[in-house]
Image 1 (cartoon, helix red, strand yellow):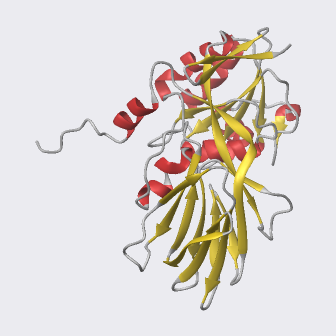
Image 2 (tube, one colour):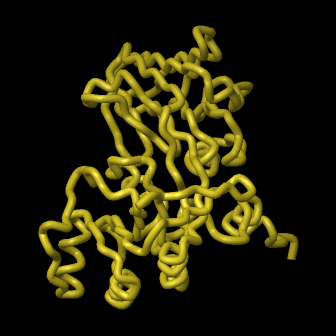
Image 3 (cartoon, rainbow, N blue to C red):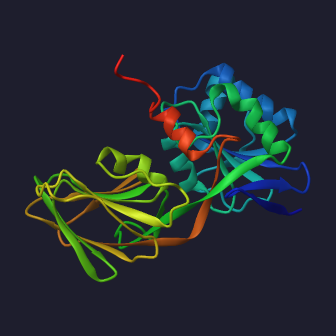
Amino acid sequence: MQRLLCYLCGVKLLIFSDARMKIILFSREQINHQPQEMAQVFHAIERHGFSYAINEEFARTVAGILGRVIDPATIYRDATGPQPAESVMVCYGGDGTLLEGIQRLSDKSIPVAGINFGHLGFLTTATREGVDALFDDIARGRLLTQPRTLLQINGVEDAAAPLLALNEVAVQRLEASMIKVVARVDGQTVAQYNGDGVIVATPTGSTAYSLSAGGPILSPSCACFVISPLAPHNFGMRPVVIPDSSHIVLELHTRRGAAQLSIDNRTYRLEDGSTIEITRADERILLAVPHNISFYETLHSKMMWDVDIRN
């Protein structure tokens, strides 16, 4: 059995050599799980004869709400471990759930799809009403995916290995009243950011935290990163777009107290003098994207750009 990739207009159409598919389910406990919606997900899996794996937290929720007996052999914990090539991760929740699910995914070549049971859901593929259609697309080999760049982060003391981020890396003040972050790109100093911190975002993350900080929106196909200051004391500082082949170094200085490193939805404590190195990861994520809806159409609908506020 092999997974075949067909390229169509910048996206990949996943075609599986047979119907023996495995669904890797992921959800978080803080999601407002509704019995009817959860039952719909499992009904779709069973209707197509898929096998599945499920994270430990979601398994407890399913058992508690649906009274469904979960086979212990299907449960994974901190990481999914090795999975068949004919697998798709399906994340039940919002964008934060999808980001955490990707962190649990051991094999980043496995495509990831999201069902939006959260709020904005910029990264998720399906809505509450589109659950059956998502699993039908998976079964029929019609799942469209787009490769998304990941950041690789080195220098985090509490991490035994380099860390990965789909959206962004942010150095932020925590206990300190103000911090200084010296940002260097390929050995050259870009700026000394005095203020609340700095964000390094991928094109995927350009519509997340970086956007809130005044950063530009980047098309997912752009081969670049954006460095955005957080509440800089120098009003002339603006976001800087750099090639994704760059080697980025962030050097932290605080007058007193600690700062915080945020990597997607994970946080780490940083002390004065900490240095973080950021590069483009060798691996990429295959993110499922909707049929017949472009990135720009998604911007219009999610950002409500078509709403005329003059009326």
